[in-house]
Length: 471
Image 1 (tube, rainbow, N blue to C red):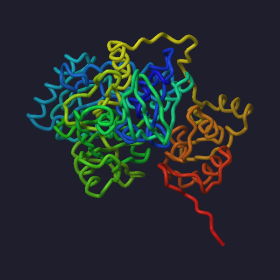
Image 2 (image 1 turned 30 degrees about the vertical axis):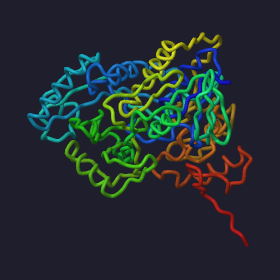
Image 3 (image 1 turned 120 degrees about the vertical axis):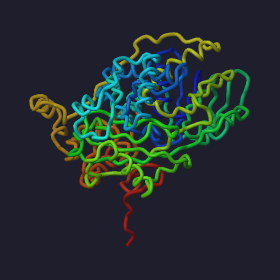
Image 4 (image 1 turned 180 degrees about the horizontal axis):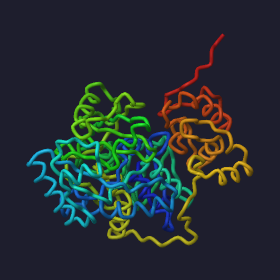
């Protein structure tokens, strides 16, 4: 019997697994997809929000500020790209000015540090490409950008190194209460566990209903994005927001951790698995974004994508105990920023409800990643001398080597698809979006996994790339 089973391995499930891996217990993560971080974690704005937006006294406010505080040190320990660049919330009208003043007061109450309200001239001085129509802005210097799926992967891999079992392609289809715990059916197998943590994202309500009477609804909400080439990456220096509305934080314009420019999202209710980026979605994003930054060159677009927010019919995160069953649901923005704080909160909630955890000795608390494109010439020479595979560049756009791809394939949570390799080492993230390197990545993946190349998939199950010709 497992002590704890987590359902879902997005950023929240990964963060909880990471925290639990510090304890002496038998822990299992069940993930329905063929890789971790395949839901909202894979497709979002990649922002570590400062914490001025959530209402005072909510779990969102408390855990956003706490999670953002923990994030920087976690990223340093786990070799995850992180950059604190600050954010500006733009005011275009007198009503907007009142809104940013409210956000300022709310942020101060929530414990956000360094907030300032800037005049038109002060805003233009640090962001010269912003619209001349801006009257003022709220400046939040603690806002950061990150690689969201790398963050989740790092947490999950570290958990795996420390003994947490992570089972992919294991969708939970039934939960039964039993004496001393629960029986879970997933991937055609039965798992016995004392405690269950429901971190199933857009399907958290369905998972809850397997074990308990219905009590909340997840309302999936889709947002589409433009990802622009690196020649647009310096268009702005900060994360640029417009004033938030009931639909969310609105369309943002921001540099990415890889040097691109991201623009989006919109907000449209959708199905849990609908990640299409339609023409109407993109038209809306583009028309709103140019109000903030009129000079964006959308001809530099290299990719469009959508993510699905696991919104709920409640106004706050749903983190509740029901005996040995714990809901961690409705984790919409600022969920990415809040994740480490959510994990801490869940552990404390479990302890309040009778769980006893003892610290683990010899816990592995860090990991190192080789990033060839960030090394000096001297560092590269040493690396290549030791292993010539680091001298063979496979992805020219991002300068990713065969050595890095093999490291990714041999990582604690082995990738099974081309997309999974991309998320681990960046091969295919650049201007050509894998047009040059994908065939070679396929060859390396087939060789290392010792499987036929036609059995490999691009992303989710069924997305085969190669078909062998039948004579």
